[in-house]
Image (cartoon, rainbow, N blue to C red; front, side):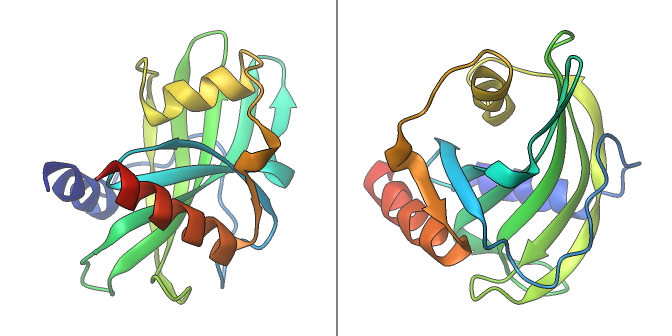
Amino acid sequence: MTRIAICVVALTAVLPGAGAALARQAAPPDGIMTLYAGTPANANFIMDDTVVREGSLVRFSNFRVYAEPIPSPAGAVGMDVQAVTLDCGARTAAIGGIETFTSAGAPVRAFPGEPTAPIEARSTWGFAAQVLCDGVVLPPTQKRTGWQAAREVALMMMARAA
C-alpha cells in the first residue's frame, strides 16, 4: 500500500520537466515492448521502437502497468507511459513527462516529468540501465506486442509475486 501511495504522490506532483519530451498519446502503445522490471505493485516495459542513443544518453518510453488502479481526480490510473532519459556515464535518470491511462486504455491526463536523479541499484531505472546501458540481454519471451498483451502478462506476473 505504501508503494501505491508514493506513486499517487509522484503522479500528482508538479515538477519541472526533464529529459526527453513525451508526445501526447490518445491511446496506450501498440508496438513491441520488453518486460524488464516488476514488483507486486507494477510492471515495466521498454517500448522497443522508442530507444534512441546519443553518446552516453539513452532515451526511451517506459510502459508501466499497475496491479491496482491508482485513484486520481481525473480518473483511476491503471497504466502510464513515461519519457525517460538515462545518462549511462553519470548513472542518472530523468523523466520528461508521463501520460496516464485507465486500465481499459482511455487517456486520463498528462503529468510533468521529474528532475534528474541518481539511479539506485535494483530500482526500475537500475534495471533499465542494466539493459540499455550495460548490454544485459533479456530473453525473447519477455517481449509482447501491444498494450493489451503487455498488460495481461504484467497482471499475471504481479499476481504471482503478491
